[in-house]
Figure 1 (tube, rainbow, N blue to C red):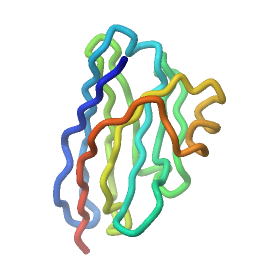
Figure 2 (cartoon, rainbow, N blue to C red; figure 1 turned 135 degrees about the vertical axis):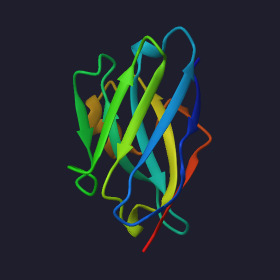
Figure 3 (cartoon, rainbow, N blue to C red; figure 1 turned 60 degrees about the vertical axis):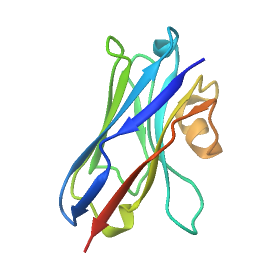
Figure 4 (cartoon, one colour; figure 1 turned 90 degrees about the vertical axis):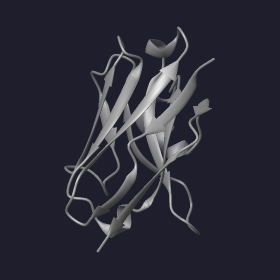
Length: 127
């Protein structure tokens, strides 16, 4: 079992940066691919980024590619999402997720589902 707790959300002006963190508990953390999803009010859940269990492979949604960078530290049971050049359309609740990703990172992202979820952290980008 993996429990996930996000932090680092907040209010930022367009063009600014935020760094989200996700702390995980559980001995099997390094076995899981990790991801970030987001959901804005009145909109469907959207995949943002994912990283393999080793950290060697990442996959990003086209909407954030080149602006967001995901990383992980298995020694600290943590993953991070560095968000630069933020836009108002990035405003959403961001959720950390853990999954065995048997279908690969792309397949996992497309499914919009996960084995484990955090409670979410709000990111608001003002114009």
